[in-house]
Image (cartoon, rainbow, N blue to C red):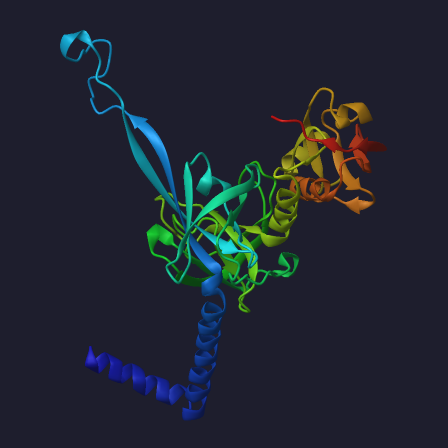
Length: 356
């Protein structure tokens, strides 16, 4: 091994001058210092979340009508505490904290642990299951360190991305990667265009921040894609711009009033484009219309292909969803669709999405 290292060193010294090597080391140290600064700047604004809920379980594998406990009865179910873990970020010094809805869903108690080891019980201000975002509030303190928020619309593929959280319960773990993709749609039914990252994310990172090289939040870590359940470098974060809109409404109303058109849509491939004799794959195909919906009222039909809203080109189903999400209840939007080879313009009045 020593001989191999010596040969490698001799090759390097022949390929690069002493000045080149020193310059490379200096650049590496500068990046390292930047990561050190991100942790110092943000660690106190990242919290660990633990939850408790009471569940019933049957202690006996024989609790079945064919099996009876003594005296002809059945074995009784027992109750036990089930615990969960997650992460969150401090939004304001007054105690508002963001996490994922799935971290606190259906639990009896939510505990927030700061980096200084102080623990506070948190109340749920409001949650949005579709976007998987919850707003918590802790009481008894007003000197929390709020995290800095970035503009996620300015995130680019190749940017540094940094995750801080409590993977598998290991609090304030710091992992680094890059932004692998932006506006990654089709991951779930939320319609979110996720930020994809190869920074290591595991169970317990949910609800924690995805940061840029300046230590600003660009997204809330949501989930991973993995055949094993552990990180393989494919993680997804909800862009912080989407989160901010949800949080503002949860603060105001405790729930989300979501704009609604009343259609199911999908992007199309080249084969579908040719079958439907469409000029391009850029747009969104309507394949379901809900009864008594704004879409039905406006005259939209099955197989209409939406190519514009308010003269803005729609390139995919994700773009259509994003445009409608930004609209307000009561707005009228002009939809341009291709129907049987002809362009039509229809006015759709946005309504509030009904429960369910």
